[in-house]
Image 1 (spheres, one colour):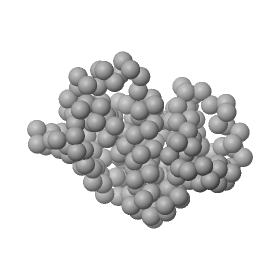
Image 2 (tube, one colour):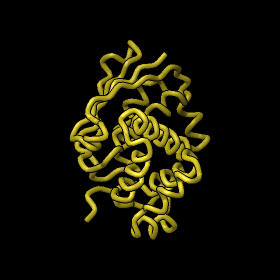
Image 3 (spheres, helix red, strand yellow):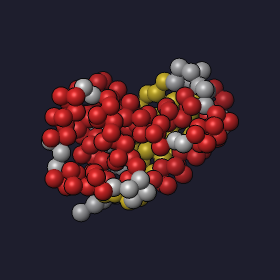
Image 4 (tube, helix red, strand yellow):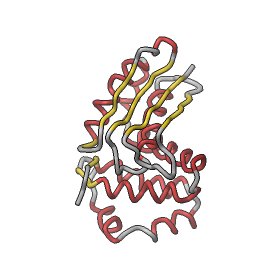
Length: 192
């Protein structure tokens, strides 16, 4: 039984990411290993559909399995988050994002999360250091949503880069390959 839901575009774009990010033999191996449920669902998903998060978890587990370590899997998952965010952001939104400040954007992250997720936890934002080009966030209650805490890093990183911020750096506490969906993950985003 589904424990949470997300918009179909994320599932669609995560599946496309596998083909675009990995070499052909790796992508084929991952896709051949998909469950019957995922294989049946992928061709029918619409962007605005609410999909059970188990579909996305299966895709993210496949991505993380390629390198199967904290460093390599982290990099692939962040790249996936950036890809999904990039593909989901239309031209108008990209222009609008260039006018936002990191503080304005960070305030919207919980709203963006809630727009595209149901029963998948929530984001909390601490802007007390924003004037020092530093924002702290927490993803709380996404238990069982394996690897999404790191894919989310890619979403926020994409947003900051779209605003023209350089040298975006992120540290996180909570996620690892042995703990892919802790109850709480803390992030610190910095930039120039």
